[in-house]
Length: 184
Image 1: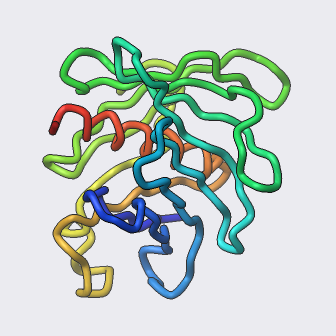
Image 2: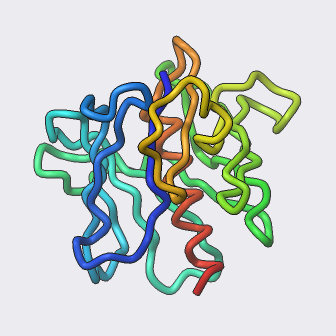
């Protein structure tokens, strides 16, 4: 699966946008429903039909810029924390905290992503040493294989079969939000 995302740019629509199949922009895979001027800086991630899947929040008055991912009720309101995404100083290496498998076993994801160069990856366990579960890249990387209607602020997330695409999306969007905090 290859998702096509637009790097978040401030907008009065509250950062709501569709995440589509990179090979068919009419095929919506996920939707991001942002909350403009929300005190908790939350984004509700929905499936293609608009059913809420999870919420990404950044708590107010925190010293670091961790993003918290929560399960949701049918209205998209946060229920319980699923995991956190944090990063090192400079946001060059990302990691999860409190993430568990479906069986309850602790697991860790590590990323090395940068939206400046539009590239990076996410690994299960150690970054660049564990099992690769996603690749982030510029559409230019696949320019010979994809349609030519890409915006320069867009990027692709390539996810192999069998990997939870919603989990990968949560980590990528959390990283994107942390990256925005460095731009302020």
